[in-house]
Picture 1: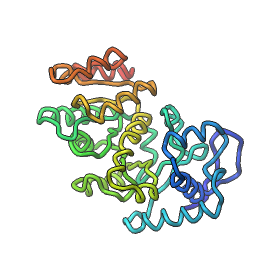
Picture 2: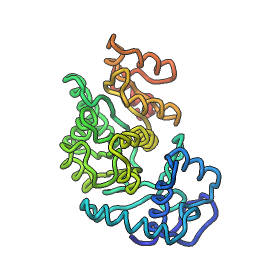
Picture 3: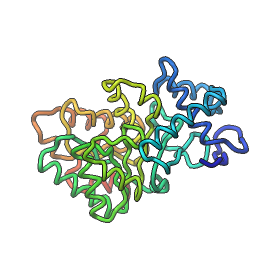
Length: 299
């Protein structure tokens, strides 16, 4: 990994930084007792000029970086990049998250993050009609020259990614695992294709994830939902149950000042009450595609 010039206007200028060392320092911070996305976000918020390496010795950072790269190579991840807050092309819009991340891993074409994008999310076990709605919606988003952003989960996410590809569009997957981890396994080929031809993003620390017992790894998915929302102009919920993890992203979108769109079919479902609750908080009910585009001033 090459050295990266510090080109951001945030904080005092530093001539260059080492992405590898910052990667290692960030990973080392996550290995410390009690470290969470929240506690690390608070640490960096308390010192807006700080980089990860300001909190970790260079020796510790370099050792952690070597361990990360070794693990990624074992997963056949040889080409990847990082985006570091206060350096290079880190997207300022991520700072709208309640607990913004200082570092992202990615594979693919980073410039896609600069496109206008909409997140399409929903149930992992959608109805047949819900899946059809997601596909139609993704193709409509492509026609409007937006990227389709989703989380590569089973169900609505997978349908949205595939429909965007079928329509000749661009798609971004924000995953809840480290690079090289395939979840769900049946999306392995899709994940590889997005990593090679589009954009795959992960905020999940490689070493911490490897050290966590399996039951704790679900913790990363709500965090990635907040990042996915921050990367986009809005989130569209196609179909979701009353306790769906999708609602985590709905709350994040409203907190971040993003548009939250809910398909009218959700309001028609008598088994759920969340659509009406979120509409009262500012969500937009979508009866036809123009409801989306009018709200985004694309007409």
